[in-house]
Image (cartoon, rainbow over all chains, first blue to last red; front, side, top):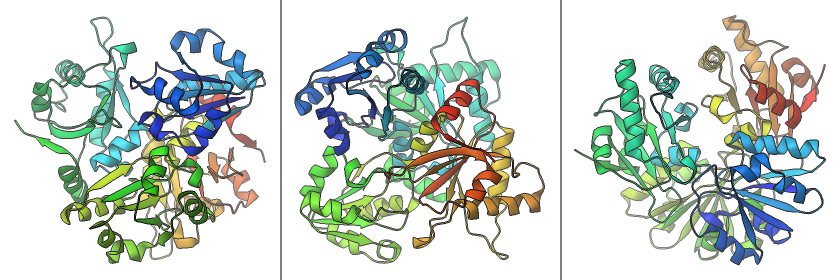
Amino acid sequence: MLYLMGMGLRGARSLTLEEVDILKRSDSIFLEIYTSVIGENIQHDIEKLTGKSVSPVNRNDMEYSDIVTRKAHDSIVSLLVSGDPLMATTHNVLRIKCMDLGIKVSVLENASILNTAVGYSGLSPYKVAPPVSIPRVSDKFFPLSVYKKIAANFREKRHTVLLLDTGDGNPMTLREAMDVLFRMEEESSENIISESTLIICAIRVGFPDERYIMGSMGAIRELNIRDSPAIMILPSDMDENEREFTERFCDRISQ
Amino acid sequence: MLYLMGMGLRGARSLTLEEVDILKRSDSIFLEIYTSVIGENIQHDIEKLTGKSVSPVNRNDMEYSDIVTRKAHDSIVSLLVSGDPLMATTHNVLRIKCMDLGIKVSVLENASILNTAVGYSGLSPYKVAPPVSIPRVSDKFFPLSVYKKIAANFREKRHTVLLLDTGDGNPMTLREAMDVLFRMEEESSENIISESTLIICAIRVGFPDERYIMGSMGAIRELNIRDSPAIMILPSDMDENEREFTERFCDRISQ
C-alpha cells in the first residue's frame, strides 16, 4: 500500500490530521526531495512528530530504482511530496507503476503553491493561464515556446504564472529568470516584456519570511533577491478588484 | 485577528496541524457554508475536535453584516472555508475590510478541488485553462460567454474545468450542467459539444464515495447522477501520458 501525500507549503505544520494518522501507522516514510525546494528541518520535524525515521529520496531513487515500490509491495509506505502531490508527472507515473504491480495507491491532496500564490496576491484564479516553467537556457537550449505562451496569454488577457527551474539544489533566482525573459524578448521582439513590465513575485511562500512583492521587472531585478523558492506572476489586464487587491496584498517596489 | 482557513476537501480530517492549533486557541469559530457544498457532519466534527462551538455563516452574514469582523476586532476569530480559502472573491473582499478596520488577517491555504480533480484524473495541470462556471440559465439569462470560453480552450488545446452552480443548497446536477452546454451548442453551432464529446466527471471528491468517471457526454448524462459536489472537465487534445493516465485513473463509462 502506498500513500502519496502532499505536505502543503509549511512543512510538518501543514500536514493534515489524516496524513499524520497514516504516517504514524506507516512502516516506511519517504520524503521526495527533487521536484521542489524543501525546508531544511522538514525531515527532522516529521521524524519528531511521528517517532519514525524518514528517508529522503532523489530523482534516481524514484525513477530508476524500485526502492519505494519494493517496500510498498508488502507493507504500508508513505511518500511525502512538497505542496500538491500530483503537479509533477513523475508521481502519476508512480501511480501507474504501483497499479501494474498490484499495489494499492491512495492520494492525499494538499495545498499547491500555484493556487496559493495567485489567490494571496489578489489576482483572480479565473483569469490565470496554465503555469509556464522557465528553464535554464544556453546557446544550445533556448526554448522560445516559453515566450510564445506568455505572449498568447497577454493577448487573451490571462495572467501567467512562471515557475523557476529548481535545478537540483541550485534553484534559479528571480534575476536569472527575468534575464531569461529579457533575452527571449530580444530574440522575438514582440514587445511584451521590458524593464517596466509589472510583475508579482511570491517569495518563500509558507516560510516565516514569506513575502509578496509587486513592481516593474527592472526595479525588482535590481533588488537581486536570492531567496528560494520563489515564483513570478506576469499579470495581464487586471480588473478593478484585482488592481485594488494586488495593491493592498503585495508590497510595492518602486524604482 | 482573523484567521482565514481552508479546510481542504475532507472535512475535519483535512485540517492541518497548524489550523487545529489555531482553532483551539480561537475565541470564535465560524464556518462558511455558501461558496461550496459542505459535508453534513463537518460542524459537529470540528466542535468535537476543538471542544468549541462552531457557528455557520451564510452569504448574508458575510456580505451584509459585520458578524465576523466585529468579533475579530478584539478577539481571535477563525473563519473556516471549504477547500482553498482564496478561490472566491468574497474572501479577498473580507481581507480588505479587515485591513481597513485595523484587523490583522492570516491566510492558511489548503487543497483546492481544482488542482486535485485535474491531477487525480490524470490530466496535466500544465494544459488546464482557467475554470469556467456553468450557471443556471433561463430565457432571460443565457450567457454564451461560457461556451465561447470552452471553444477558445479547444482551439488552444487546453482542457476546461467546469464548475457547477452550487445554488445555495440546491446544487446543479451533472445532467443539468450538460443540458446547459447542449443548449449553448444549439444556439452557437460551433460544433464543439455533442453527445459523443469526451468528458471527465469528478464526483464527491474528498467524500468516502468519491469517484472519477470518463465517457461520452451522452452516456454519462443518461446515468442521471445526482450526487454533489461534482465538477466536470472537458479534455482537449490529450498527449500520450494523459491518455494512459486518464484511462487508468478514471472509470470508463461506455454507452
